[in-house]
Length: 368
Image 1 (cartoon, one colour):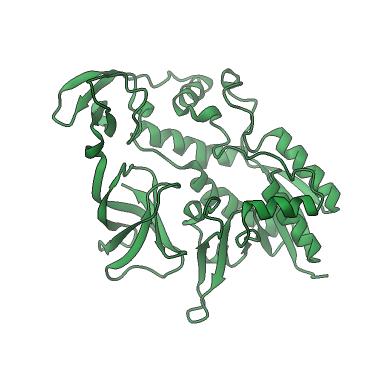
Image 2 (tube, one colour):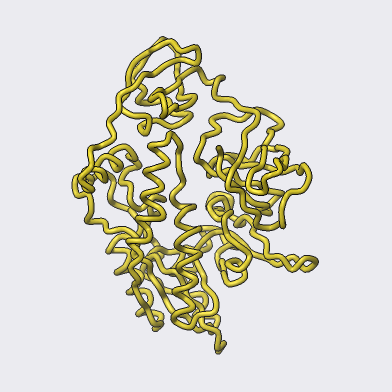
């Protein structure tokens, strides 16, 4: 049996449970760790709004503990609620109030799951961690640099959320499911006799029931004893014609069609939000197209940086089909100009733009 200890991030789902079981079957020394990130009892007024299937629940902790007991491995639950609220939840709210559309799962990966978790793992004597993410890691034999690649299952690939991983994190991380499809993972879980083999999928954002971001923000403000940010403003066209009113730009995101509260005889979409003027700009679908944008806070994963224009495929949303583009350096290593070959729909400030070269993740940043 290997002497190396591997800490598995156990969420209670089929993916992380299968990772732990696979490593055990390989004769690896394993410890299971669950990060308690959000107290599901908070904001009770949101209870019942799609709470079923939320990740990081008490039921998930129970399932993770049961799997660890079945495998005969040590298991611990660690409370990261305060840090999660400070580094994920509050920035999520601030981004919405600033008229952007954030991705809390990427923030969680950057600041919690692949930062604090590695420290926690080292604290229990683990030299590496393993997670249930559908992505792959390899080392470039020529440069020695660790590279991040898409998972082989295109329907489950999670590389989009992992562009912020650093070299030292990749060096200590295992993604045992990267070469498998979801169907293969479930089959393995059944073969291994795991009680969660047929457990359903959890929603992406653990603290927002039913995806109602506005309701969550308002409930959070009330909990903190603050006045909910109900700031009325105008809904206007690109030319400035007033079509109606709204109760806060945080209720809208670029590309949104439903719930605008205005009707002019043709479908309208949110083209932009202007928090400083409390305006929401709407227009027909054609006005959503953009040929270029700048990405800020850029990090490079599989390459050292960008010194000259480079061709890439760029994803501007998790489910977006990567579009051919050229990346241009700006003189600031953390900012890149992206110019698409063909204009893309709903380039949304606050979302991640991730740069690919085939299956290889070059890097990524935040749409400015």
